[in-house]
Length: 223
Ligand code: UTP
Image (tube, rainbow, N blue to C red):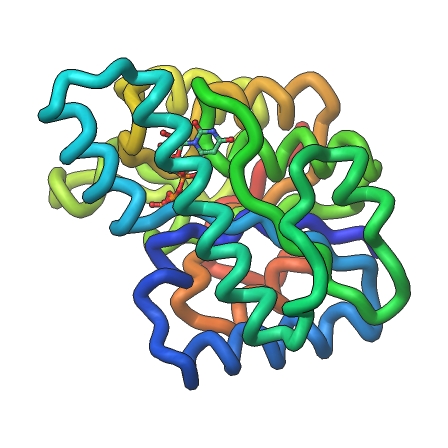
């Protein structure tokens, strides 16, 4: 199968070297059985840098560019853990697709301002005709509201791409803003009906479980 992961920077950037090694090990195992692509997010460091730049009065576009660069640094860290430190982080989708090879984990970060790495992963999944897009974040799935802010928020076990678009549109669109998934990613998932799972990636086992839908997160499917 062809699998594209969106691995939240909020997961990866918080890991020490042992944690990074564990993610790398699991991804390497998965790449023995599947074609594996990983798009890494910016996490806390991206948000910290973006906040500082915004306070200095810079544009949202420039803030996005800072986020993109931090996501690439996180991608480099994962590449280091995978032992792929002689390759460059792909600059675009075609380059990423070209780098796929048996047993290899292709890692990339952000690409263009005005979106998040979820959108990058959705576009990459579309391009490589992925069988599964797995968004691994630090929440358990898609909720009716942000569960870290609203204790009455309820998780969806399953939803249509159209509903995902609706929910994602409720997010503020600013550099570094937080949501389960960004609206552009949701629109891409909708237009190509990409079979998608949104799971808690803090539990590494979910990376594998999500391939066959055996997870406690949110499954995005037409029916
Ligand atoms: P992400 O929001 O994708 O990182 O990128 P994230 O940290 O993975 O999100 P979580 O918290 O772990 O789920 C960080 C910021 O980088 C910019 C945006 O400003 C985004 O909010 N970015 C990233 C872009 O502008 N374009 C991209 O292609 C990627």
